[in-house]
Image (cartoon, rainbow, N blue to C red; front, side):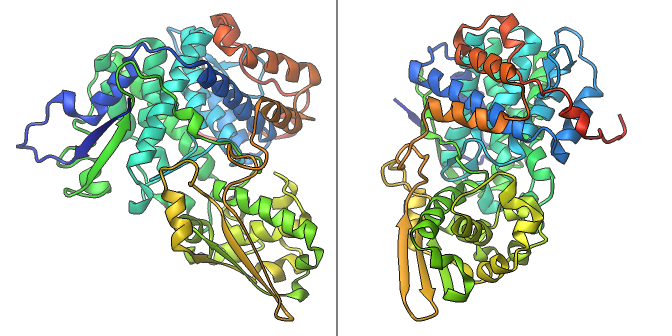
Length: 508
């Protein structure tokens, strides 16, 4: 049974035994030898495939090229065999923290992998690159890797359920540093003391502001979770060498809660599995069918349906206004409630358009679908009829959709809303959608065949057919893999793909 752990700040003269600190309780979850459920293992396999899908599609994009070049400029560290880098030959290895960096950017670049939304936002698949990189370097087998990934998902998602970071403009990757450190600790079989120190350091080094997701969004958006994963690997290394970390990191008088979150009066209840309870959090997460911010997934599905059923809605000459009534998050982060003029700028970066629901709804309505490259192309964004219709789309805060967004009832939780389209002649078209088609409660929930199909689609033209089959075979045997096979769990680009881009030069 899940246990709720009360968390608050403590003055320096108030005793807080280590055993009552959240970082220690996270470490206790990490060292619990409980087995991984079969359905959890199955979903971990799905997400390993999902990560590889979106990484394959991003191999020649600027941030990924840069991060890969940085990783390859760092040789394999001693006391391990190194880790693979997405796109490169299996014999081309880097130090695990740099492989985690490069692969983390590749996974995150297209904003196209899994998500979990509660008090905070997250992409828990970001745990996989650092945990896998350490598995390869340290010679872990598939069973150990599965156990580590299960812990990473569990810890990040439990923190996300309880502690809001965005409310205080702290980026969501602050929950990822501790979770990846805990997952690595589980996989390596480290003791609670080492994991406790690594979790604390993982949090301490990964708190940053949300400016990375505001205004003109930069390429750092893809790097932020990779940085958290890299810091987690380094935190584990330091802790294994006997080094200590700021403590209590969450509850201290000058800790994260006191100064970055709800302050000295802040109170949280963090749910963690009880001793002996299986780590099943991954089953509450969901992946993306479309390459866009998760809150846009359901809106894309609704827009493409409306555009197909009512083609006249695609013509701005027929439209007076389009209002998306939705949750607070959708309204203020990716909607007109953000106050960001860039969300209506046809020359904005891909990262910015990816966080503009007015743009996304417009293109999905007009095109009847969504493409991870073509839908963001500068020429597509600048099309005059699109710009005209786009500027007629606004969002409105809706209390009921906000309540459903934050609901703990999985049957009620929703990420969509209601659209009201006013035509020039006065006719009103209304429709609503609660969850994306690919959501577990959606019209077409994603299953193994959908993850495999997504991989084949995104890898086409990037990986050779034999490489696609090699990776899928390995991934689908994940818990049975030997250490040697785990070392091959990567994707190799087809000849000429990586050579088609120039590696940027830097300091290293």
